[in-house]
Length: 147
Image (cartoon, rainbow, N blue to C red):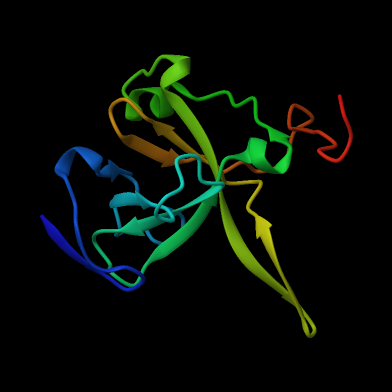
C-alpha cells in the first residue's frame, strides 16, 4: 500500500512491515500503525524514524538504548505481556524515543528514559512502557573507555 508521509513523501509500505501499537503512544493514542524508516544504504543504522501511518505528520526518532550506553531490565505486567502476545525474550526490542530539549538558547537531543518502547519484533506489535520512576536496574556504561 502507498502511504503519504511528511518526512519521506509517498512511500510503498508492505503490510508485514507495519508495527502496531494497540494503545498508541503517550499523547498520540489515536496513532496505532507505524513503520520504521532509516537512512538509505545503512545496514546497521544508529537511529530510526518511527513514522505513523495514521497521521502523516507524526514521526519520532528512536534509538536502541545500548547505542547510548543504557541497559534496561524491564518487568512486564501480565497485561503488557498479553498485549505483546507473549514474546520470547530474543524477539523483544527496547527502543528510546528521542526529543529536542531546549534550555535558553541551547538545544540538545535527549532520550526519554521513563517511557521506552517495547516491541515484539516477530509479531510486530508494541507498547510504550511508562515508568513512574527510574529504578536502579537501569545501568549506564562509560562508552568512552574500554571495559
